Length: 361
Ligand code: CUA
Image (tube, rainbow, N blue to C red):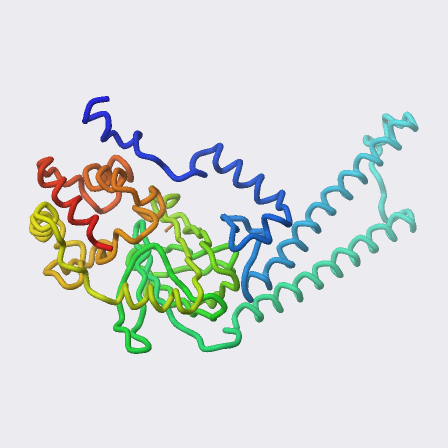
């Protein structure tokens, strides 16, 4: 394989679950949940039939209730229609449909209509009441000291802002949201461009991000692990590549993460990375910030601790050195339409910038 072939975007290792087959697998696996899988820590994928925490746990029974109701209605209606066809066919009453049926002329027929209306209305009232009480339950923060994370939607990534707390200064990161287990977290949701929707199925409901408005949603993860989410409102050609990872950690682990991420970037060791820092300032610093350096751009994600993230390009690629090299060389081939232009830099410059980015732990 030549060097050029090795850098082809389709040679990049993708995360599983993309494409039509991936979507079908995801859908089927979300329907057939085993209790063993559900019991594993936060192994929820994108399934809407698994939950963790106060908000997700409140929504799950309603999801099942509506799913079962829908299936029952379809089965009962199909049985009634099938039964009626069978009865007519047995009677040999082939001309019946041309004569018309006078519903009001037969007392028994009207009883069927009234009973059907009453039953439907009763079921609807029960589900309206259930839905409203679920909405009320997930709107409340829950117990324990809360924390706030601000999320700003961009085409096509998530800006994540932590306010200063417990002596740690505030800071920004992107796409991966760390939270402490068992603590209610208030998400303040805004957008910098179009409407996006913030959705982490296992943790709770969807919430729109609307230009000029701040919405909020409370979420809480009761088990440690990685909870996947997606943008749930069509927001442009890369809408499908706008993934969220909520990483729930025990309190002490979360505090250590927060402290490390509030700190500025370390000065890179090694000649290539140090030279790469200069190349980065010159070519990338207008759009990206690396705290502790001159790079102070705000158009793209904050890269201060890029190397410690799990994925690149909002969940598209695992964060490996190879994928990082491909991403900085060919962002428009990997994610067409995103705001980062193909850099058009010499191979040496790209190598140096790559070496520098790998030091941003
Ligand atoms: Cu952002 Cu769809």
